[in-house]
Image (cartoon, rainbow, N blue to C red; front, side, top):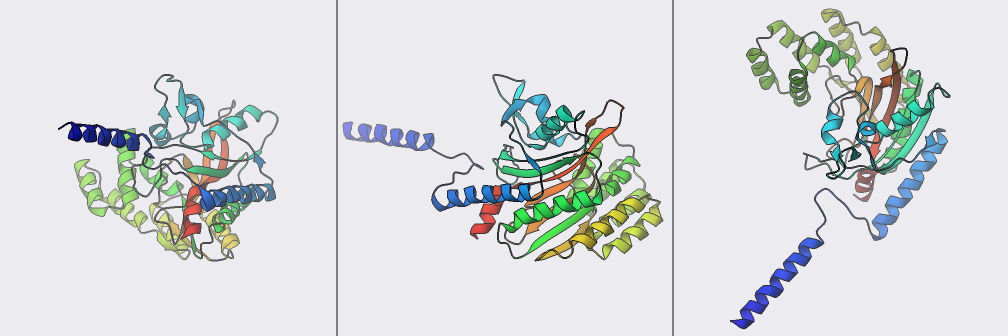
Length: 338
C-alpha cells in the first residue's frame, strides 16, 4: 500500500511538472536551424525596407489602450487584451495603430511619413489555422496616397513574401468602396452591419436570403448583393465591375481606374496570379478603399494584408490618409520549410 501511495505521489509530481512547461496553444518557440532562419529573414526584411527608403521604428509590445485602438473599425478592440492589474495598459494585437500615433506626433513637421516596423503581437485566434503570437512586419505611408505609392508598397510586400521561396503567389485585389456603398444604402445599425458583413465574408447565399427575409429587406437589394458577390475572378472581371456600376449607379470611376493602373504595373511580377474579389473582407476592418491580400500555395490562409485606411482626424476636420501592409514573418518561416 505504501509503495502504491509513493508511486501515486511521484506520478502526480511528474504530471504537475510536465504541465508547468507546456507551451500554450498558438505560441511557438524557435531553436536551432529554425531560429537561425527566422533571424536571417528579419535581416533580409530590413534590407528590403532600406531599399524602399522607409524609416525603421520600434514600438513596445505593451502600450496604453488608447494607443492600440486609435483606428476606425471595431474588430481591433475585440483582439486587444488588457492587463488584469492595469486596465489602461494592453498587449498589442496590431502594430499599425502605434505607427499611426508616431505619424500624429510628427505631422506638423512632416506632411508625409514612411515608417516600417517588425515585432511580436498577440491576438486570440478563433481559427485553427492562425497563431496567437504572430511576428508582424510591415510598412505604412501617411499623407497624400496615390496609386504609385500603393504599387511600391505592394511590391515591397511581394519581395518579403518571396523570401518564403514559394513558387506560386496569388495577389487578390479589392476595393471596399463597393461593399461600403452597398451597406450604406441599407440604413442598418452597427450590430446589423457587422452581422451582414460576416455573412458577406462567408458568401453564404442561403443565410443571406434568410437574413433579408427576417429583416424584411427588399428582394431588389438582395439581388444587387448577389450580383456584387459574383464580382470575383480574374483581372478580366474589370469589365463586369464596370457593368455592375452602371446598372446600380455606383460612382466607381476612380476605383476602377486605380484597379486598372495597379494591375498594369504589377502583372509582370514573377510567379504571381492576380485575381479580383470585391467581397473579400479583411479581419481588421479599418481599410476604406483599395486593399489587397496575398496567398501562397503552401499555406491555408492569407500570408499578408494591405490597403488604404483613414488614420485619424486632422484639426481641419479632414482625415489623415494612409496605406500600408503587414506580413506574419512566422508564416514565411513555415512556407520556407515546406
